[in-house]
Amino acid sequence: MRDGRPYVLAETVRLCKDGRQINVSISISPILDEDGEIVSLISISRDMTEHNKMEELLRRAEKLRTVGQLAAGVAHEIRNPLTTLRGFLQLQQRAHTVNDTHTDIMLSELERINMIVSEFLILAKPQAVQFEIKDVRYTVGDVISLLDSEAHLHNIEFEHHFSTSPLLVHCEENQLKQVFINVLKNAMEAMPGGGRIILQVGNHGEHHVAIRFIDEGEGISQERLDKLGEPFYTSKEKGTGLGLMISQRIIEGHKGLFEIESKLGKGTTVTITLPRFIEAQGEVVTSTTGEIA
Image (cartoon, rainbow, N blue to C red; front, side, top):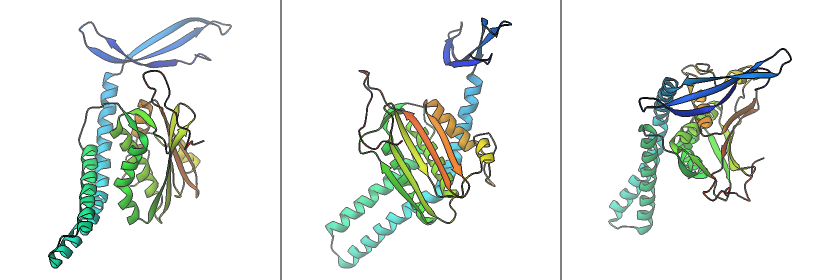
């Protein structure tokens, strides 16, 4: 509460007389005397129920749009192992024998198809928000598997550097996947001529995890950078501008930070910082390797 500016404390839950629970945003503004000293405070409580419902509707709409964009890539991702399966089955049909090595490969490819379809269905299906303890390395890895084939189609290579130790966060994993997909899709679209996208997942100090996406794309001017995240601001012909805004809100909901650094002609770096999971006994899960400065 400095210089007379309001200070938003937090969003909390309040109980109504009829027993309903509502989400409330509380802000406090100081009243100053002639000498600039605080003489009293004004507290304002605002019902955020409808506001939060609207944000959730926007998040779901953007999620469906993301799923639609993924559909072509997923079809190609499934076609590759299906080609392998068909080839080995034809070989065995001609030879009239069962090759154990071929069988192991086919089972592996079937498992990969099952994983891809499962990931796609999880993203597409509306689910209740449920925070769980997850190793963010595997969350990023699942997204890479989902987009890897589409990246190859556009001559883009994913280069990843993950911590060798677990990086646990308290999160809604599907929401984080939605954010990571949005960031990677944007990076890929910024590289029409192909190139490399570097993904770093590691420690950020003692209490945070950093997920960093570094592309070699066209970059973003400072003027556009200042406007990113505003609703309906987009440079894409068919874009809505809501994807980045929703991604930022999701990370804020995880008490994290969403930061973008970019220079024209030199690419863009998106850094997502999330709090580390703190165990019940109060000890922070730490890692001695893979720190990101």
